[in-house]
Image 1: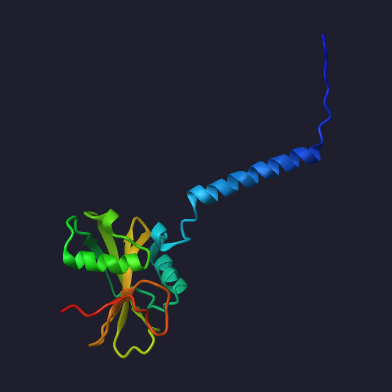
Image 2: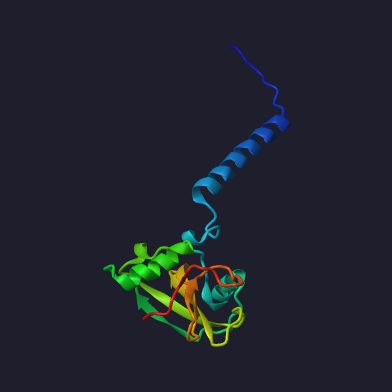
Length: 165
């Protein structure tokens, strides 16, 4: 019978385990991604506080309670209005086509810090299963525009829709 013994260097074993753990973490970040890293990954917002914090992270100061909330259905069939609105969504990294036919929650908040606003401005969030899937910032002034749901900018970005005719 032959018996073999081996000397184990604990430092090398720990270094190897750390390298494997680092590789696993890197794979998770690359393949799983950080859910809040980009708008296209539908940032999660739980409850009113989460929605307000989401808007705050974009630089928007809004009232603590929504001025309006309710369910809306994303149309199953494409139409010119939906196409135009979805183009605005795409400019901010969202896309509503995958939610066609689904019922989502719509939350509207009054914006308190829109640059140069003379009339009320509202932030709309479209939320599906606690994930932001789209939205907009709407200036209700006579020459106001609807803009993509992005970080606050002065002046407002060119990615806007003129008032509906």
